[in-house]
Length: 324
Image (cartoon, rainbow, N blue to C red; front, side, top):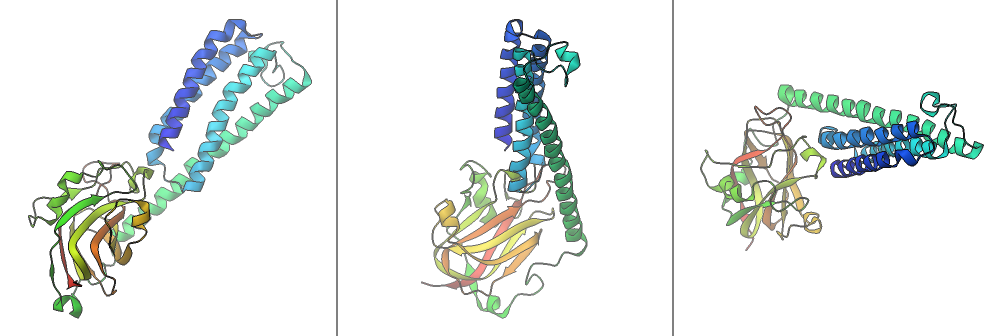
């Protein structure tokens, strides 16, 4: 949505500039000037909304609805005033810009429809953005405060299970960023090995995003551990950063191909919506696989950087059983 709004805004701004060149040839130059300005101003509005869109947290359906309504109103504003300028229409609805100009009834009806419909759609679109986004932020803030005040620790954080105690340490042969929903250069792939180097002072981190759900750019990212052979996890301990909270799934699978199809084949074995600091995941499911995926779906705020969100992982240790 961010890129779409920016491109549509830039296009309307350029259309507004071209409209300015046509003003002398229009039947009502004053209305032509209005159309010229509407193109410029509405184009800048769409581009600005595109830049701010990562901060607007709406569901996909509501986001598409809001964008469609707002884009329609912006283009209808420019088109309606341009048609009125070319036809000499609009005396009843826009007397200041139209003066004494009045076109035939069908043309006046077209202009009236565009003017009234754009007024309705811009109000509805802006209300969706402001009201639903505010409600979403309020719900998210409440969720964060609950995490801070009374968040339950991830399953098994307080004491390891008997199966974990009987298991053996599992050491990955490699670790990499797993980002099938984004660019291969996202989320600091060169520092992925720091998450398993045993050095508590080094860490891997995602890129920072302008929104806790990856700025609405994707649904998740993570680290994938290649265990070298099929394993069954009994326990995974992850040292996250101190900011609350990362939402994370622990999954196992048998392919490290970065694709949505492969992502869907992984089996979830444990999860947490309150991961911070040292977080232990005790696993009781019997699923086996060569690859262990730490799949992050929601980011904590980046300390000292308001409006930015990022997950850090300092260390990962695993226990379990080899299958061959």
